[in-house]
Amino acid sequence: MAKTLRVGVIGVGGIASTHFPGWKDSPHAEMIAFADVDERVLNRVADAHGIELRYTDPYDLIANKDIDIVDICTPNMYHAPLAIAALNAGKHVICEKPLAPTPQEIKKMIAARDKSGKLLMTAQHFRFSGLAQALKAEVDKGILGDIYHARCWMLRRAAAPVRPGFILKKHSGGGACIDIGVHILDLTLWMMGHPKPVTVSGVTQAKLHKLPGAFSIWGGLIPPEMDVEEFAAAFVRFENGATLILEVSWLLHHKTTGEDMQMWLYGDKGGAHWPSNEIFTTHNATQQQLNTQLVRAEGGEPHAKECMAFAEAVATGKPSPVPAEQSLDVMAILDGVYRSAVSGREVRLKY
Ligand SMILES: NC(=O)c1ccc[n+]([C@@H]2O[C@H](COP(=O)([O-])OP(=O)(O)OC[C@H]3O[C@@H](n4cnc5c(N)ncnc54)[C@H](O)[C@@H]3O)[C@@H](O)[C@H]2O)c1
Image (cartoon, rainbow, N blue to C red; front, top):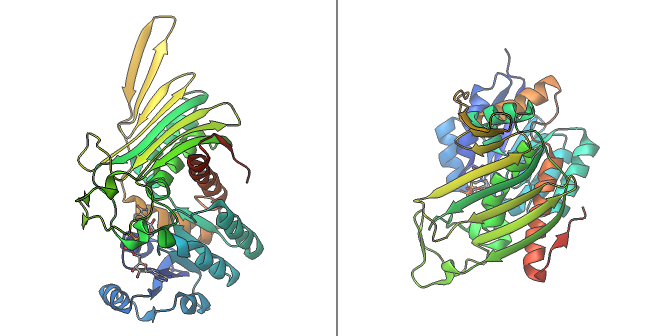
């Protein structure tokens, strides 16, 4: 099959490397251009992947008429301006998470998408893991019944990403809430079938990173300039009566060496746990309690799979595999956490 879609990647120094295999393996797409504001990084990564077209100004890549898909892998604050420029230039856009750090920016991205008629996808790679897809398939068949409560967390112990793109608000837009809250919240809302969130009560904390000698296992001492939260917790109510409890942290005295990421779903027919993919039911007629476990999960590296899914959607005229409206719900909740943390009260979500 001829590869008919040409891809330009913006911001090639970090997570972008997990996208490259997806573009290479896609029957529809090929990478032809890279952009990065750091010329040294640009040349090193482009040399490694045999990419001739190189830009230190990402808007020059966007102006290239040969490019069909723009893949945005820059720090968060540059997602919206780059994506809107790319959509306005008639490109399809896949963009790393968070789609943007505020609901207002995501709404502008959706407006640009609708005006252009192109696809816009958030790179929520956890949805593409075999375990998550196997559980989602069962949940969609109704195995849990009506999901009326969820608990989810992504908790790290001394594991903050100590890079300016994450710990300085001017580049990231927020801390652990925006960085990893977006992962586990997106996955949980997806499993729940995207009920509409209506209120949030939340807190954020920045305590441990300010202590003398505070460190991250990924990068030595935490720089004193870090100006974002390291922890957040929230209680969310949905229009359908369901509720959700969220906890996220980069630094927490939690019993884990690295990361503890879990989701619990509770419905009127059964409960489920991810990533163990266990399902729990109780049979009233026999007074039996039954625990089962999904053991079959498709393989494949999820970042690569998300890029392949996007190219497939563009090539075959399908909808975006992760629609921006779903990312708007996620970001409205996280924005609610920040607003509630400031006001000390539950806040209503209007967006
Ligand atoms: N899905 C995941 O698991 C995952 C993991 C890590 C990061 N991310 C997301 O990916 C994005 C990038 O994170 P990262 O870890 O790769 O960061 P990084 O700092 O390692 O790499 C970002 C690259 O973008 C370049 N850059 C910065 N501003 C730019 C601009 N305006 N135009 C062009 N290039 C620019 C930098 O020079 C750098 O090479 C963030 O939004 C982050 O949330 C996602």
